[in-house]
Image 1 (spheres, rainbow, N blue to C red):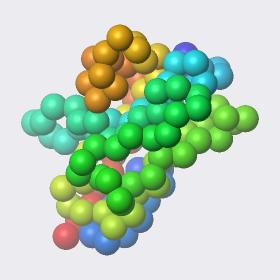
Image 2 (image 1 turned 45 degrees about the horizontal axis):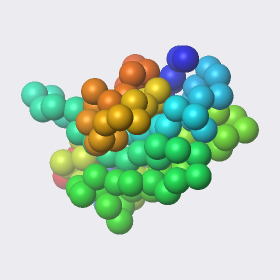
Image 3 (image 1 turned 45 degrees about the vertical axis):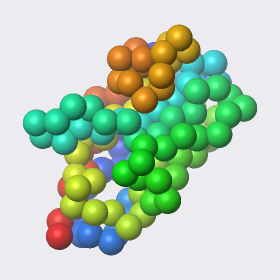
Length: 124
């Protein structure tokens, strides 16, 4: 499966941005879906995930209440709505699928198919 992210850019603190991730095939219902981010010099950080088709989203502590994960199954697309952005949200954002259900969804190593990433820069 190929994943393509879009929607990144340069915004100011307090602004909103919506990221999209489109898959080349319909895998989200069976393989889970997630967003991670990676700032320069830091490890890849969990943002949000839905691990099975009927499940609700889980979020990383730093984005709870500000970010919302949604999906459009018919278009094999998932979204990350990011509100009240902060400079510390600056990172490359990645979507992922192909989740190994044996492991915690918050670990990047639990996901095996990744997009190329889209850069989000939040200025103060």
